[in-house]
Length: 181
Image (tube, rainbow, N blue to C red; front, side):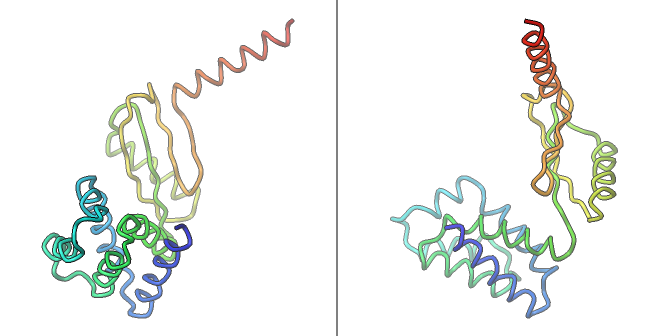
């Protein structure tokens, strides 16, 4: 499935490049991904007993009329080939590939409580400076973090959470106790 996902994403990217519509296609792909990843939509799309015509009708009713033809064709082909479960993963990879072409990386910031706009902007600036790329920050809250935050960016985790500091301290104490025996 990974190879199939990569194939579809690369095909979409090639069409966007050929038509010189990457920026517009990026916006539309993000809208599609965010709309179609909703659990209710996913549940509807993957139901094998629902006719393809009903799934296509959903796309026609729910999505913007000005959606690029190749993106519409992609959706219809995925339904015809019974690959509905791959639509969102393909779109995510497609978006990631376009972002790479534009020098954009996405950073996921997860904190114990909501960060202010100033804090998010500060994180964005630091990451942009370190990576020499344009950084888009997506912030979310996870009470299990206890305190602090962690950042997922470009395959790396930068962890500044209280939980991690406590776990590290616990590990150091265990090593210190074991070394004294």
